[in-house]
Length: 110
Length: 118
Image (tube, rainbow over all chains, first blue to last red; front, side, top):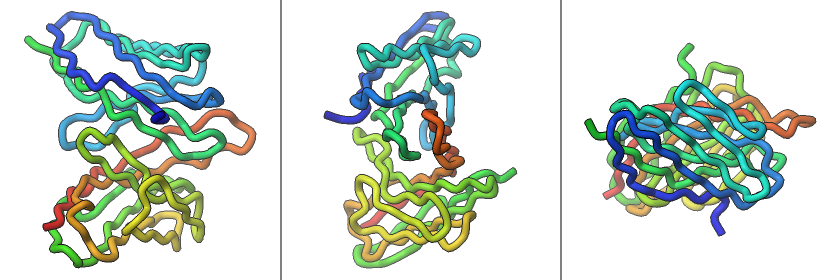
């Protein structure tokens, strides 16, 4: 089983829509998680950190469900500029190494 | 602040050639790592380092060497390039995982190096 698994999509949604991505992780001892955003041919950039049950930053909400070992990312009122690939990230226990999901591709349509 | 700087941005090699991908960070981060990113495979860890003089293997280390002589620099060497090493390579750094903390620090990435091996 992969350390982190994501639905690759693609998700094609109209402007103003709400979209949610789920991600499952295999290591039940993991305590901190991240969502990164990656634009085409660019490096991944940190979108949100998730250290407890959830985190909210404007239109973006990340939630953590430890019992089911999944984290989700909710994007409300999607903008054209939200089009990107979203990477779910979980750590190796007790270490600095991070495991990345393969990413979920989002396209916001005018 | 420059952050994480990778060079070159693009490189084409012939099979069997060797080269070094450079990575430098100016954030005084102890942890540095190299990933490769391939379509459908996501980011896979090649090698990592938790401080000067210390390196270790990640998921896909074969065909690559690293060294960490200073905190700032973490070069990745391809010993004898193969077409299977065609990929996008990212260097990343972060503060070291705190010994008494459960929480990791996020990684800061360089701009990437696009390598093609023919």
